[in-house]
Amino acid sequence: MQSYIRFADKLSAWFGKVFAWCVLVMTFGVGYEVFVRYALNAPTPWAFDLSYMMYGTMFMMAGAYTLSRDGHVRGDFVYRLWKPATQAKVELVLYFLFFFPGVLALVISGWKYAGRSWRYFEVSSMSPANVPIFQFKSVIIAAGVLLVFQGVAQVFRCVLTIRTGEWPLREEDIEELETTLQKAGRSVLAHGSEAIDIVTPKERRP
Image (tube, rainbow, N blue to C red; front, side):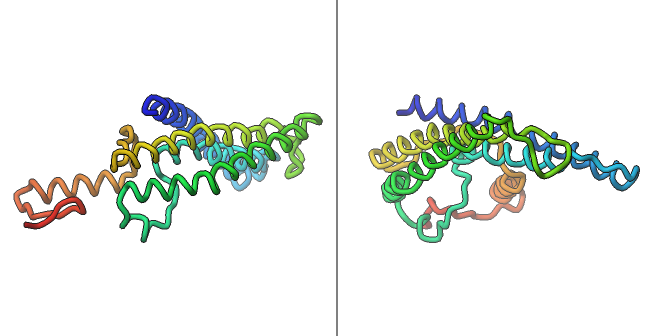
């Protein structure tokens, strides 16, 4: 199980980080459109198509990566109070009730949707540039397959947590700047010249 979890995490991370570069393509495309539209009065017929395809691709292909890092939104005002084993049991049930049926429906529907688009080499109807979009719709299938692979890894995580009572550690990865600053701030407060006592959820006062 551990080896599969590491494999799925690395696979999801590789795809997530590769497709994260779509944001640069989108940024340059939109920036170029703004310049030529307002400075040269010569708008492009393709910038809108480029922007939604890049954003859609990045959003879809980052789903498995975000799942592997436990980054999806969760209403955890009750969840966080449970023991890890209880959390894992609830997640395990929910994965089979909602996650896998939903993702498999996404793959099956996406296969039909993309297949129809590939048959007649669909182009965008949103602009006069006739930008091809059949390859863009294939992203639905790829994202769904990645989510299935990562979902199996999440199930294995739940099983291990039920057995051990602790969530398996996740690999070190990039984090939000505010998280880094919070950690740095806590370190200063704990070890600086004006150190104070900091009680974390795992610590108990005597």
